[in-house]
Length: 248
Image 1 (cartoon, rainbow, N blue to C red):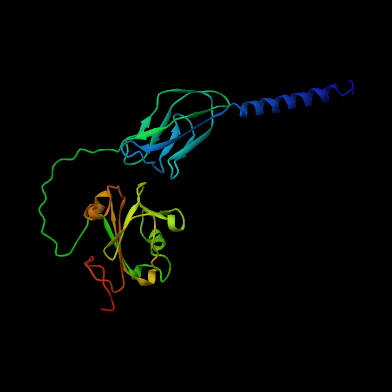
Image 2 (cartoon, rainbow, N blue to C red):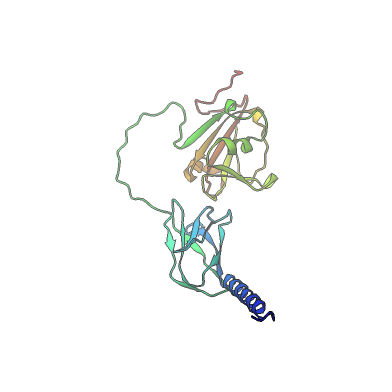
C-alpha cells in the first residue's frame, strides 16, 4: 500500500464535490410574493393564509395584505389564498424557475350565504340596544391609561395600529377603521383625542359597518368596522342600561 497521499486527495475531492452539489441544490429554490385585497373595496386583507398547493410553503398576510413565500421547489406550482368570510381562490399553474421569484396577487370576494326567510316578532325595547355590541364599565378597565389601549386588551377583536396621532382602531379582521363617538360627538379617525381610563364611565363597542349608519349625517360615506362609544363620568345623554354613574 502506497502512502503517497492519493487516497486522502480523493476523499477530500469527494467531500468538496458533495458540498458543492448541496449548495447548488439549495440555490435551486424560488419564491412567491404578492398581496391580497378585498374584491369590492380594494382594501388589503390581513391574516389571509397563502400557500403553495402540495407543499409546506405557507404564510399569512400582514396589515398591508402582503405576503412572501420562500424555499419553493421550482416547477409548475399553484398558489392558494383563503380566510374565513371570503371565497377561497386557487390559481392556475405558474412556472417557477430556479433562483427566481414570481408575483401573484389575489382579489378575494366576500362570502355570501343564502338564508331562508325568518319571521321575527319582538317587543320594542325601552332603552337602546344593538346586536353584536359589548358594554364595558369602568370597573372592568384598568385604573389608569389610555382607554383605547385598555380596550385592546379587554375586548376580543379590538386592535390598534399606528402611533400617536396616527393611531387607528379596528374591530375583528376588518381593515376599515372604527368610528369614535365621545359623549355623543362623532370623532372620525385617525386618533385625535386622549381619554384616561380614570375619567371613563363606560364604553360600548358596536361591531360591523352597519353600526355607523345612525351617525351617517356626521360622516362622508366612509365604511367603518364598527363604532366605539365612550361616555366620561358625569356626561349627559342616553346610554346602555349597563352604564351607570356611581356618583349620581
